[in-house]
Length: 125
Image 1 (cartoon, rainbow, N blue to C red):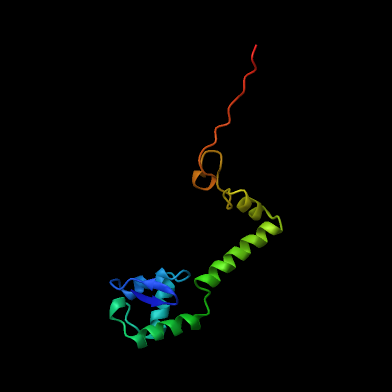
Image 2 (spheres, rainbow, N blue to C red):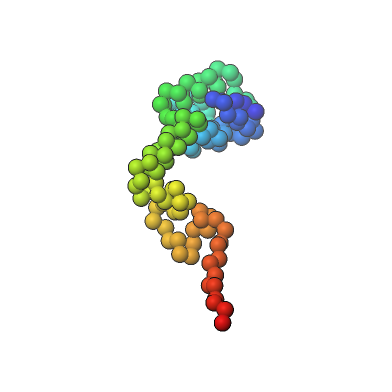
């Protein structure tokens, strides 16, 4: 397995399909990076030379995109900020409820977790 920016990338896949294994790089950014590095997207990752791998790394760094740890840290800081200022989105994140206006009466099981049945307690006569 090739290693780019601390991420293991599969050798048997095309480099265009392997670059999205890096968190923060999607298919369209992978095409742009390969275009700027001057590498054919159809080459397999295992067939790349060290110079080509270096060209890919420099092309990724020149884009200025936050990737991997930096991107994850930015997202976490954004969530903490929303929760700290007590905005609607922050409260929804804190309560583990859907944030973007989805229905919660019958759906949202993925977000809310397992169903918690609330029963009626009947008084004894």
